[in-house]
Image (cartoon, rainbow, N blue to C red; front, side):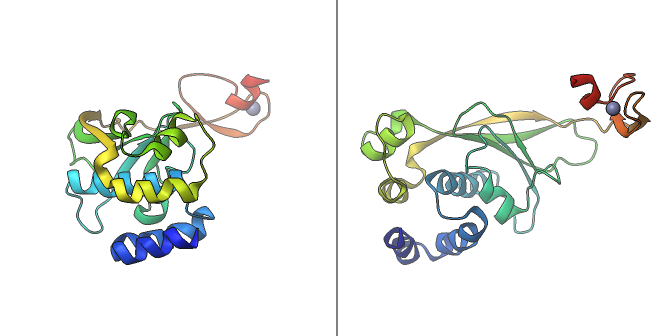
Length: 192
Ligand SMILES: [Zn+2]
């Protein structure tokens, strides 16, 4: 593991400074977190994200990939900068904040593309789960491949309308909850 971190430092100091922030938050540099980092840097370049500009991300997996967005961009679950649609895909859609009154904004969906991995058999085996490949063996291939193993497409993203929040007391447990329509029970009581 040390080796690959040193290699990153040698090859790309900028990338290394990002990796240094990811490790304590995520626990270590996992393959998925590194993929998330490469996707983040790619999205910022494609969308021309300026320093300090807010971004929004929708990750298609819970595994590792979302963390660089939380750590480096402050796009978190709590501030709604990050959402997860758990499709089990190594893919993310990123957009910048829409201007006021605009109902649609351009975003980019980036995915790890198995068709582009002919030169990277370990990465391919890890991704398709055809063999057990440790992170230390996948990461050097990812570093070498850079953006060449990703594909992307531009997408239109609907900006959600701000709805007026209605708070009600649940008729069963008595706790307050955010009501979506005219339901009498909170979602927890409704589930039970
Ligand atoms: Zn309740």
